Image (cartoon, rainbow, N blue to C red):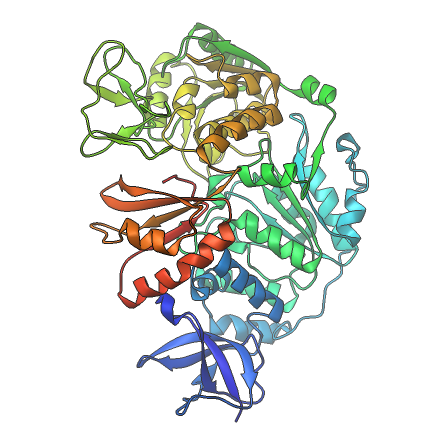
Length: 617
């Protein structure tokens, strides 16, 4: 019997390599098998087949799981790339890339005639003519149908984005190429429109589908029965026979970042997949993420942006009220009342939990800032801690203005704000949309929304968007605070013709970029500031969490890392020991950490490594 090299799906990092097993001659590379490993049954992927082995005693594979290939050779390379890119075991990537097997789904699919292989279904539906001239991209549809490349679309505020994407998707399907659509949350009118037009050619797994439904959808994509895959970050690795177009909506959304190892970002995975197979990747958003901005500056991504005059004409009017606070000022109150009287929605953009980490003086309202970089700080034991520069001030915090020593969250959360608006506007309903997947109520109504409910698609009849405490969003502890606040304000602002911002810092770059509707101008200033701190997009970051009472030492890390890397820590974060690495060469730094990862794994130490973390540290 031949020998199969099996990448066993086990957790220890130092066991992240193939092991030899006897295997049947008919077993292909990419098959998923059940093996005995360490005295227990587990799964693995066959990565190679050989006629010889150096191992003296080789156990046989227990059984092959299914008649289909789980990962093709090209897809295995993407798995290896993701493991290297994010400093994680390949087994962790496989657990994200592949669903759990449901045998009954295979039986039913075989009875219906599309398993283990399905005839490739043609697209015979409507084909609206692509209308992308406003972005100087009249040939984008033809490029997506035949060519490759990476593009960044910044829609006009008045754009009918679902229609534009349907035009592109149907054009690609008609030319016998497949489509991957990744959205940050379950609610997306663009995804709804695409699914409605392509019908049975699509599988849509938004909203956390059950195990059985997920496996059936994945199997349809694997066998070629489905030619369009729609979902959240979990579908970034899903197979398609002839991938021609990959779309990532709201590419800067934190929801695209996985919260478990390998902590990958769906955006980078989709970009890499499209590059490898010669497809088009289209990133969509009003404000580029730090990574997308760097790709745009390096000209590795082509911008699709309407002429400046046309974009400014379509942008909403932004009014700045220098009366910051959790409640609405006079201008905002009048605008909300006017919108609801005219049968429209009034949208109030709020923080989700009151930005409770950022602190302000209870007596005078002055924000508590870092003594080094002036960013917002949060409580630590003892003193305060700055997530932006890593400074731990062990002294008791004191207000610089009034010498007060009592501090409270910088702003109220959505629930509290909704209660206040209900008392202020008893004549109209108030809905609080926290998180993802909520439906927008019918107008007239007041909608208090958090970041998870802000989507690229414009809800109907929005009369005004109010940001009552932009300072809380901008000044929350965290590197991406300004970037994320502007992304939310631009995205929600595109829903309407009038935006009211309450702020105590009207000259802040976020406020000025919003007034001018100028994301590029914001990034030119923000990138220069971050370069001084050696943060993205100028450099890369790696976060190492060694847990409670972590024993990792500075000497241990410095001996492993390149001398050019900057190491901060240990930093007190929620009672855990955290280190932060700033590097100009992410590939070299991640490779240098590999021996340490294996040593920690052998010692059974709970160490978590996150490359390009959202929260720094």
